[in-house]
Figure 1 (cartoon, rainbow, N blue to C red):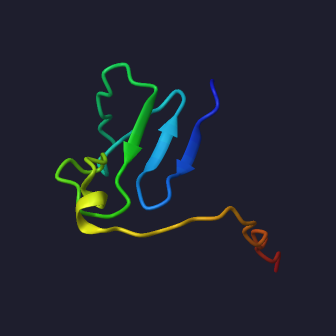
Figure 2 (cartoon, rainbow, N blue to C red):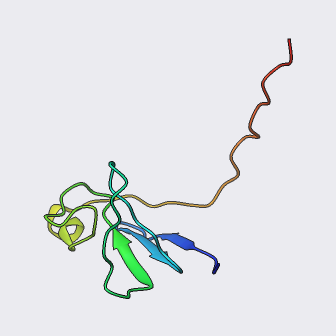
Length: 79
């Protein structure tokens, strides 16, 4: 399986590349038409959710993301 890469585009979408499988809440798979790169909406204004349609430009969406480390996952105590 190829690596999935998700890039947070400043002031824009999440760009997803690789062997993508995208499903809705009921588990039904989206037909991606052979695409290996898609953009997912972060601003909430897309008319084509979950895909980006460029609405972030129209509404002035701003969000810059810098990589950081998350805290370690705490292990459940064995009691």
